[in-house]
Image 1 (cartoon, rainbow, N blue to C red):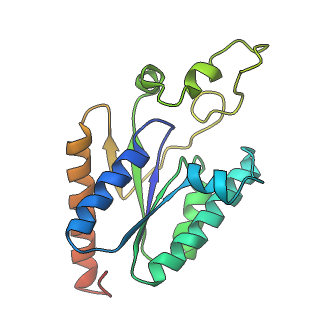
Image 2 (cartoon, rainbow, N blue to C red):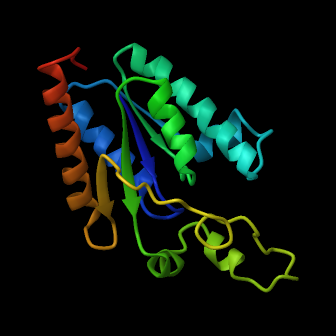
Length: 183
């Protein structure tokens, strides 16, 4: 199974992926997290943040996830994934792909500003540290229309969000184990 944790920067994708992974490991599941930031930094430094490169990044992450998944490793891709078309491509290409939309209002994300990105994106145009392609501010984010699961991290704590996502995954696995292979 491949889980796409998508949402804006700072919404809690990686935090929740880590907490969910820990709970699943406690239940003896094999789990891997593919953190888009880490992979981009270490394996894909050739990619920038153009639309084409964002698509290519997701294709690469999806391929890696499919390898883990083929070995019965539940794989969580933690990435912004701003385009519906790139998410749909993974769903079409690979088996058992689920979209988990990790959402949070933009004003709350600006407040959190976990990586300092929002502050830089909101700088004046001529400022040397200005970011021009921050998803949700000055680059698009197409919210998933029908995600398999939705969570609003502004309304729930990390613990509550973790439990809800964990429960969704367990229910999905149980329903699939009745009809398909079990992870």
